[in-house]
Amino acid sequence: MSDFLLILVSTVLVNNFVLVQFLGLCPFMGVSNKLETAMGMSLATTFVLTISSVCSYLVHQYLLIPFSLGYMKTIAFILVIAVVVQFTEMVVRKTSPMLHKVLGIFLPLITTNCAVLGVALLNIKKANSFMESIVFGFGAAVGFSMALILFSAIRERIAVADVPMPFKGAAIGMVTAGLMSLAFLGFTGLVQI
Amino acid sequence: MSTIIIAVTVLLSLAIIFGLILGFSSIKFYVAGNPIVEQIDELLPQTQCGQCGHPGCRPYAESIANGEAINKCPPGGQTTIEALANLLDLEILELDGDHDENPVKTVAYIREDECIGCTKCITACPVDAILGAAKQMHTVIVDECTGCDLCVAPCPVDCIDMLPLPVSINSWKWQAPETTFTKQLIATDKRPVVEHQS
Image 1 (cartoon, rainbow over the protein chains, first blue to last red):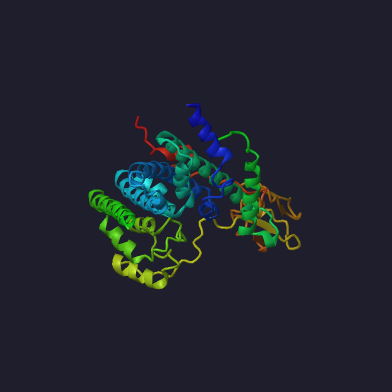
Image 2: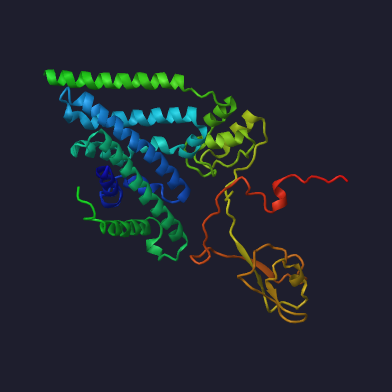
């Protein structure tokens, strides 16, 4: 049990996927202009990341390893992720129109989020077990959501602040992201994994 | 050679299985939507740009079906508006370019040289934001002014301007969350008034 807690703390804070490992920067910069959309994106990513890390673990364990096809894992995982995202979108649209309205167009966008593929590949690299893979995927998603929501809240405030002309827009966004990353590097050494 | 064949076969069968799952579930989980929404959605440009204020084209199509204006799609331009008007049998409208939902907050400003001290704006002001006395110059307390425009019309010498008040880091606030009660400003709005019969 404490192992899972360690993995959770490690992925959320110490090895935060966005701010420390620099994965999934595209949605981090792209969908962080408004807090509301950032929350939608976070929810959708949490959903997809957890499910796809489970599915890619299963595919790797029961399909790629028996046929000794470990070198094909990138292609196989991309296939799995794309299918999982499409399938969840269909199911969510049918079963819960309300949830579909919230997650909306974000679900298909996540297919190209490199954090999703990164989690699947890191699970294999760390030789995580089934439960560990789930916790790892979920922790990565929570870390991503936290970074995205914090960042979009800061950006909403910066948008009305008196920023010098050359720094307006994306430039100050990059500076902010860098400072946040520096802050998160302060967690280094909190957990040894 | 055999490794290549195995790899190709395994991945191909994986892809075929996934394809079958998706194909099957697209039939199984087919949502019979409002057919008019489908037709409107087909006319929209599918850029998912959100300039209409909706998160994507389909939500906008749904709210058009519920009676929203058809002229909020800048990427589609006039041709889309005409096509929509044709489909829905509505009048063709001009493209609504700046339908921003947050109009600029304004604040009243009295040109003090021209003020004759008639006190008419003071009586009009609902929040007591105007200082002054009879035959004395008046002025507006910027922090109190709500930008309601009510003082502009009574002024006999037209010396009140409504100036835009840009949002600064000090005056910025979080957006209030959207609730179902947004339009209900006072408590009695919440339920229909029941007349007492004695």
